Image 1 (cartoon, rainbow, N blue to C red):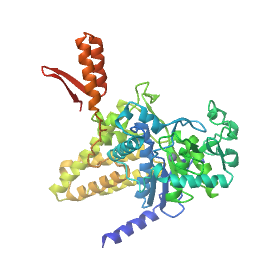
Image 2: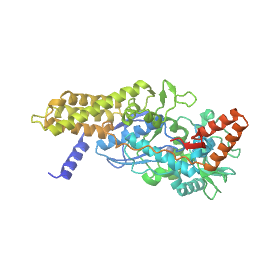
Image 3: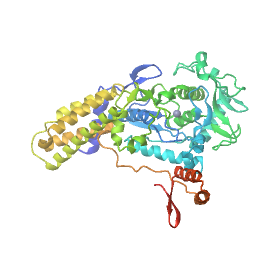
Image 4: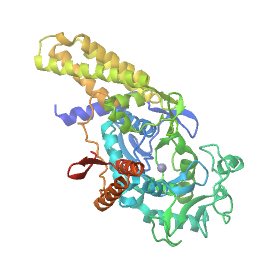
Length: 507
Ligand SMILES: [Zn+2]
């Protein structure tokens, strides 16, 4: 029988299987079947990162939820069109309020210490977008079909803004174009932050006295000083964060999509505003199924730089932790519960990855040895895989799915030296299936971590060295030390040699 005939037979069986993919939906606040408009084709949009710095482990917890949803849908034989964006403009610092205020995160990053590595905000965006894709690959997430950038779709965002004005859902003020929340009665359905109880969300933020209602939010910001700006019928400026996702989802997936995901912090205002804009534009329901991954705590507390419990994905890699162990740690708790990330979580995950890898190596060795004998594992492993897939179909129950994967790995490793060729073939099939479903057996080949290139300003260094030599001659050693430390902070080391001062950039 040809492979394609076997494949279609398998797909038919999957289609006929009684598995229903159920997922917690934040909109109806129930676990309900994931229904696609086109049978067995999932159109899925997930909010990606704002690329102003390295992604932290909480960001990736949410991205891994999306990855697991896609893997489960594919295991059921569905086709998946997954769009996950990159935000590279328009995300302001005060993003938890109804109408965000503050600065563009990209601009602020350029002015920070890390920003000194970049010539401009575009370079900074490109660098962190690349770093993000790299982390993504190392954590073994499947690649989305489309990964659009907000700055690639500004034209559509301007057209959408115009259309919202024409339809009476948005209006122009001297500082921008605002969406009128009053024009959309369903505002607040997702988050519970309706117009009547928005007071908490809009406290302290009065951005524009010309706004009709303080709950109205910006679709376009007028700003001819902004580092990334475009010309529009409303003047020079940049798009609001929310309109970017409304436009990108529609451009690639159509007016109505099957599933939308993001982090818990995206629910309000980002997703609430996306719904309002998208539905105001099309007059159709935007999305009927919303998945939000809860926060990640470190040591029982919310991550924060000031508390010293803030970790980027890279911070963990740099400690020599295997990427798959971090992946497993991040998916060890149900997405709808807070995950308390501890050293123990990481250690347990690392141990379990080793168990999966040992089983994989044992299966490889037994394939090589090609011992005669019956298939003693096939039936057990097929049942375990089926149970793991069942668990994933039941609201991405990763704990049960992982338990089944480990049980299978244990039964393979227990017989390691005796496995027949037939058993080894079944073992390999099981591990391949588990790897496709959960991504915890084999990662992609090691991806090198890109390092930001340090721009060395030689003239500046030489003038500092001269200044330091002069300070030493004047016996102002405090000043000389201060200059040495200043250079050290820039990554430049000095050495006093008999031939004068030599300098080198720290690697
Ligand atoms: Zn978004």
